[in-house]
Length: 186
Length: 222
Image (cartoon, rainbow over all chains, first blue to last red):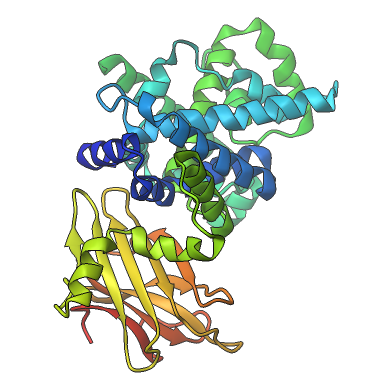
């Protein structure tokens, strides 16, 4: 979202303008919902996260400082916290000794120092995604965005599983490298 | 690659490990700062990709609940029956309503700071219907809302079409509830917005509207 629009919405939110909240919801509810669905794998829980996130934003609207952060980054951070808090609580309730990927992920969701958090804006994500070679972009879309398994993605792309895995590995490394470079530049 | 487990750390972030791999990585992480950093970064990256690129919309009821809670917190107490109507009225229609009531022709669309709002008018097919379209070009998203639509028989759907300088582009189906209200949010499907129409189509319509048009923004190509 462009700075001017974000400022406009932030001003509207600060004034308690419902139109601003609606605009924000329409623009970002899909992202919050998708993130919650990906990590929680439960549509009901994901919808609760969406409600909580936008309600928190409404309650905390006076705290948002458009000069320090952009709206999507702020929203992304609130959404991530809500999702991983939920994951953490569920892991505690389950009290399972079994190593699950989600239990492992919630431990590592926090970003120490928050420097990376600050540089991941929507524009930046699209920019670095756009720089990937097409075959790497395809596998990232299928696995990371659409949530398919690597085997499923390999079938869709009509490539051997090993090739799909190595493309995903290369793509993830490329993306991380670009983010790190961006971080240093900033 | 600095550590042989780096690939596992990356794949863990996108949920692409089997149980055995997850156990191996979990045992390795406490002793490897590099893989912990890899997992953190990959996780943040994977989340950012999903947040920015995925587009499933939660059910419309979620939106209504969010707005209702926010309104309550703000001190508004609207009757439930007016909540859906609020959605239509709130999109900058105060000015528009004034103009319409005074008998002046409404604007095709009003461009505000970064977003575009337009009104939808009924054709002779459904005289009771009205609607609003709102575009947030910078976010690439648009919202269409309508009221007064009749519920269609099975095998027919309302389909929204964005009129562009290159012709109509399908936006998506507009689901109507039993009271005739409809709401949808979608990605803006093309460039060069010139208006919006809603037509009655068969499910999975073709590239062009074929059925009768029931709502049209002023100025949308006929």
